[in-house]
Image (cartoon, rainbow, N blue to C red; front, side):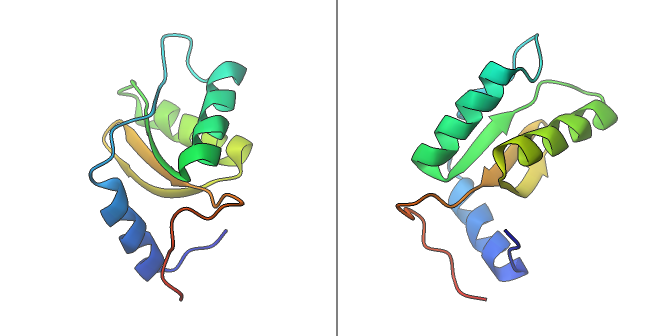
Length: 98
């Protein structure tokens, strides 16, 4: 899903008050973690994921894998926190039109 700058700004505003729903552990990105992120996206549509690594390249690989595996859209990355969005069938979040 391609989002316009206006839509991304709207989602960033909504995500500001959210707490991370999924925290990656020492095992990194496993199938169970991807399944949990997928479940959280179905339930909330907009979530934060905490990625505990200081290595930028590793973090970028994890972010790319999460977005690819969950078919979500990256809204933003701030420090160790990733914000992603995926529209569910119930459409809980209304985003502005382009």
